[in-house]
Image 1 (tube, one colour):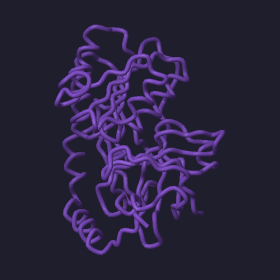
Image 2 (tube, one colour; image 1 turned 30 degrees about the horizontal axis):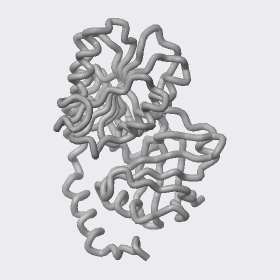
Image 3 (cartoon, one colour; image 1 turned 90 degrees about the vertical axis):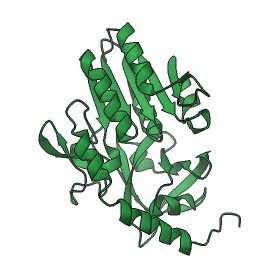
Image 4 (cartoon, one colour; image 1 turned 45 degrees about the vertical axis):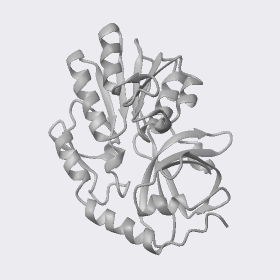
Length: 284
């Protein structure tokens, strides 16, 4: 059943966009950490996108995506008023959120900040003290800063070039906070795999529970294709049905990084062919 795009916002022109979609049945049940599977056109592939926000009263969900392949490039050609052919969800296990004795630190990088936003908001609504740390190469690439500031009293920013917040990495701010606050109950990290790996390595000496989201490796979304196999604590798990969130200290990040590049050449070729054949009607 087609789902109508109500609003589109280009967060980083040509790279990252946000869609607000009419999906009342999904919005009514969506929880932080859930994702959807969508198909843009009849012959297109199905891709997973984590829900960045949900409004049950308005019957809408918010999705944020990075244009990096054929399907997201095709998705980028759609605008408000257009329909997404298929939208299925909410899927995956929701984030485990309950009242904590100490603060929860939510760390986000890249488009992962959008997914982290939904989780941070969930912890806030549960009455937890939420500290958010977001990072990007420069200020222009930071996402959801204002949205996080609307409910989170402490939003820490790190940029590689120092154009906003502290110059450096999110792990610099995280370690500093953990050294000065021994009451932190949990750290949640969503973003590029190298960032999540660095966060898990940074928190391990402090013995703080660390949760990472492995949504980037998902394909089918319902546990049928097996492409999202990950090793967690020496056991095989499927990110889409067993996760996508796992104990960051138990994930085999070396294996995960290798699996993420398994179809890199085919993905690049598909994207290049799409760019050659696609006729842009964006200005019409």
